[in-house]
Figure 1 (tube, rainbow, N blue to C red):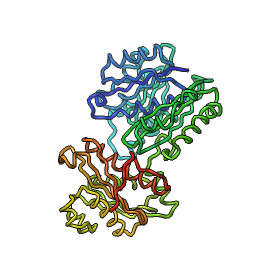
Figure 2: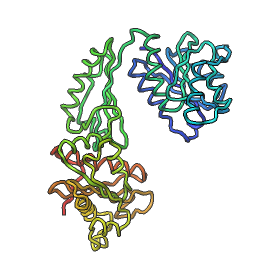
Figure 3: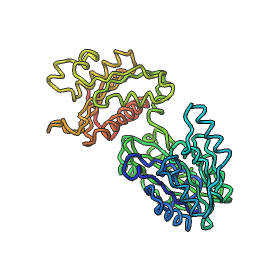
Figure 4: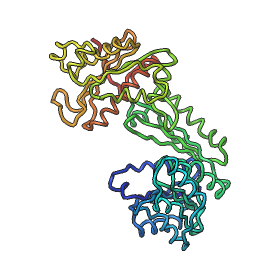
Length: 428
């Protein structure tokens, strides 16, 4: 298998101003293309460091991908490093300079000398034309190995990887083994429990087949991969392992695909069953409704939502019993159920869901510590609430609450037994 190295360039990546999503995306793409990513470096906009890492990576990796430092500002020095590494001069590329001028003309921006610098290309590099931005990518050979330098803007990087780098890599490395990867999404079950239910996979993990559990706030993703001389052979290797997963935990798998979201799957279920939903949110502050309406066409099933943060909104808009608020508090099964019933009634929706809790980091009590969340449901004739005690992290608590609500509705619509994380329903 061919080796690859990823170099991410930019001070902003090291000090936390920008999350380095490029490295993970490039790693996934290279793996799908049949490369084994051996190292990932994140380095600042420093001439000597960039030069030394490019020299090191191209000395052993068949393909090096570097991102960042191709912009028009003073700290964008990657092209200069490449030119010096190759011992070449900079020359203006006619096609790139015309492309940049056309963009500035369309947008009525003032064209400057710094923008023209983006059309200067080190001799010996092939331009990876960037239809999505002004900075082109570069393809070159050094130490006998291939390298690409790409802009750090994520959508530009992705475009160049898919439309330019893949074509060059296929020509440079013919006859590589093909990798096929499948992703199976689960929610509401811890990684350890999921692994236990699946059982020993040892007999399936051979001859280029691998499996991994990828936990996150939205649940655990099971990734399985296989390599072979052609795509069909790789797929056949995975079929038996996939069958094993569905045999053991099929009810827990809500979808397949690296980027698939639970809200997508639930939305399709609601549309197919001609059901509508409404949400009343306190501790999630609209995140649940946002997640649902992120999906194009969600107006087919999403009726509306109310962010009922204050108690008077719970009472006046959702019909929550004021005495119950006084006796049990806003974070309670009684209030959660009334919120769900109230919002379904308010919007005339088939399903009502609600969230109320102590997201943190403060506000907890011994009886209701930070992370305590009640989620209410009105699904047909069912009215119940689930209680979860999550973490001390506010944003994580909101994310996990949203996931539990979506997964609960999915399971109820399918008629599955059990609730996420084995939570016990409370009915009143």
